[in-house]
Amino acid sequence: MQSALINGKKLCCSMLLKNCFRPLSAASGKLTNVEINDKTGVAVLTMNRLPVNGLNLDLLRDLLQSIQEIEKNKCRGLILTSASNTIFSAGLDITEMYKPDQERLKQFWNALQDVWLALYGSAVPTAAAINGHSPAGGCLLASSCEYRVMLPKYTIGLNETQLGIVAPKWFMSTFRNVLPRRIAEQALVQGKMFTSDEALKVGLVDELVASKEEALIKCEKFFASFSKTDPIARYLTKKQLRYNDMKELQDEKVQDVENFVSFVNQPTVQKSLGFYLESLKKKAK
Ligand SMILES: CCCCC/C=C\CCC/C=C/CC(=O)SCCNC(=O)CCNC(=O)[C@H](O)C(C)(C)COP(=O)(O)OP(=O)(O)OC[C@H]1O[C@@H](n2cnc3c(N)ncnc32)[C@H](O)[C@@H]1OP(=O)(O)O
Image 1: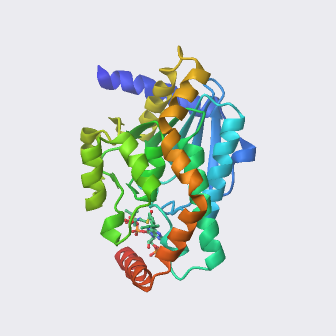
Image 2: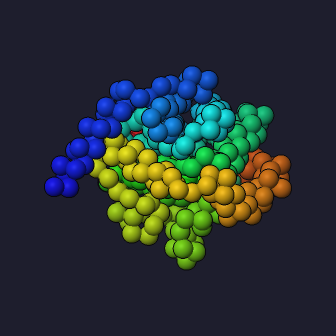
């Protein structure tokens, strides 16, 4: 009975996908794609830097432009997802941090700050359809949304300490906004990657579903739950709740870039990043 119901919705969704989605051309950069469902007003923002949606400067700039366009168009919701079938996002593109060009390194971190501020503080309701692995920066993006739906058998978490990296304060605040403090602290210090089941159990994600289509439907349902809520009151409430986290970064943006640049340039950090990149490449062979 339940699967018949789900199938019914699936059919509905693929019909919607075919008939109702139009691209938001201004927001569709090379590395992101935005489609708006004309019936519901919900925008699907798809990261499309394959194979792993590594967050490099170009993808971050496209993401920011897309989020801003979705806001300008007063969409009813923003669903963040991936064009890959197995990876939501591999997090920050480590090649941006390894033997970096110093000016680009600053722009890169600045772009990440801006994407986080835009997504975490978005006036449009946000949800993530996590259709693949979501380590580190990938987890940051998903956790910045208000609702998360994940597919089974993937992993998600802030694994920075496992890489010998310290997650910045605003990564940690984002996590703490989602998880009970003690669980957040344990996971952050361990650099824990949660399986989909574990993520559901601790509340890092809100629902598990079998397919991306179902994930999109669940995210749409989340937005529909606001149908009787005043949108301005909704946004102001969200803004108040997230105000301190955002203000902290806004006040320290320049210092935060400096901290990042100085941290990344340390010889020991460069060495670790080099080894890590090598290990990823070896694994791929
Ligand atoms: C006290 C003050 C402190 C201030 C500190 C300031 C800043 C420091 C904080 C910096 C924050 C960093 C957060 C991050 O996001 S770091 C990135 C963390 N990401 C990861 O650890 C993920 C690594 N990747 C994987 O685990 C896997 O690749 C996977 C995502 C699970 C996908 O696995 P699979 O499908 O098997 O694909 P491959 O592993 O074969 O990868 C394909 C291809 O992509 C390359 N690649 C993968 N991830 C990255 C990446 N993050 N960056 C760059 N490149 C990546 C991989 O090397 C393969 O490349 P080749 O095909 O060329 O071999």
